[in-house]
Length: 187
Image (cartoon, rainbow, N blue to C red; front, side, top):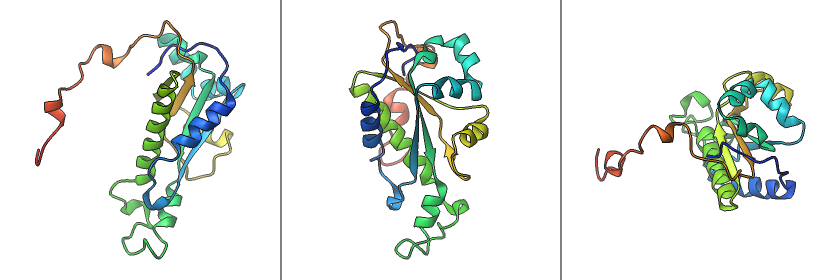
């Protein structure tokens, strides 16, 4: 995860190409309920102010605020419940969001986000995925997002600064050993 960006502009055509490729992640029932809102220009400072994240990043990781792009992944639960009400998917009760043991609108959106992170990395650019902890409803409303849609965090994207270094939890917590997390045939 990049925490130090340059203020170099980001090619809008490249941004669209990356997002278009990222959205091709798996989609339960081909529901396609993943959306992305790409914020650039004056929309970026507005995002930082609306979410109150500007002060936190200014204090802890100021270089994040130089990212020229913020991408908001948005999940649409209704796309999934509507799709699973159709005749070829009906009968499992999944036309009601409460009946989904795993809400695939979140799973599918997370996979699309992972695609985007990998695509950005493959281009030797920088990205930081982070949660939005304040004023999400106000942000979505300001951006005209329809009711019922869910924010699944944010990605700062841009050119990685030469001074970017790993920070945060990975510098203080070791990665768990494979033997702790890989299980064969049973736990």
